Each structure stands twice: as C-alpha cells, then as structure tokens.
Length: 65
Figure 1: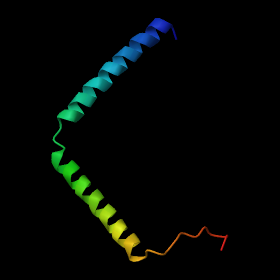
Figure 2 (figure 1 turned 180 degrees about the horizontal axis):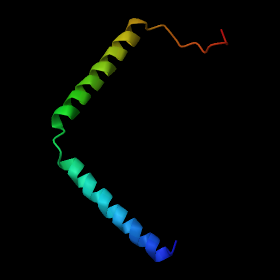
Figure 3 (figure 1 turned 90 degrees about the vertical axis):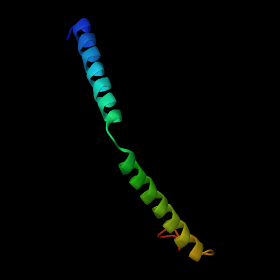
C-alpha cells in the first residue's frame, strides 16, 4: 500500500474514533458509574472483614506444606 494512502486511511480512522469517543462521553453514565463504584467498595469492605476475622492466618503455597 502506498504510504500516502495508508496515512490518509489512518487519519480517517483516527477522526472516526475521536467522534465515537466524544459520543461515548456525552452519554449519561453517572448512575451506572455510581452503582459500579458502590458495588466495588462493598466488595472491598467485605474482603477486609473476611481477612480481619482471621488475623493469624497466612497463605500457604500448595505443595510446600
């Protein structure tokens, strides 16, 4: 493929991707992001609670014990 043709196709694709990214950023995602964030922190809190119940427990690598 000729370099100039390749460069032109690259610029067209880049323009298309920028347009699609701008459309994506304009879409309302606040509620979805809020739910994801809350769920993530709930999972972190749950994991910390599970770990704090067993303070002396250490991990064992299978095959070495």
